[in-house]
Length: 147
Image 1 (cartoon, rainbow, N blue to C red):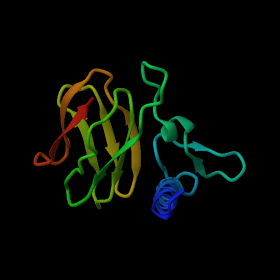
Image 2: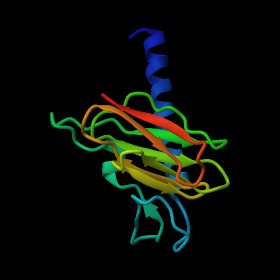
Image 3: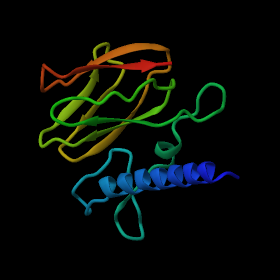
């Protein structure tokens, strides 16, 4: 194996583990303080644990899991997650100090994320472009592309 390929794999592993750690940190809250809507309390220590479906995505029609993607909200703006697989798990990470929504104009998906919170929803299963907005901030608009 070449040195470049080995470094690339190592960097990919570090990036994956960093993302998992960030999800865990975002989802870890004291009992009663809330947390990701897909989290469940662990009986051992009362902290939320990630739903296995959130990490792997929702199965697609071909039996393969759909890749999970994340929309970050920062500065009252949505990041572009790029193309999304049909039925993929879409995580919304609100990095602002105010509550925002990700609400499809056609009503096909809706998520409410409080400040500092991560929530998830399932992307539509039909390919196409789905415009969405924030119900609380009329200037916030974007579109989710399902391919």
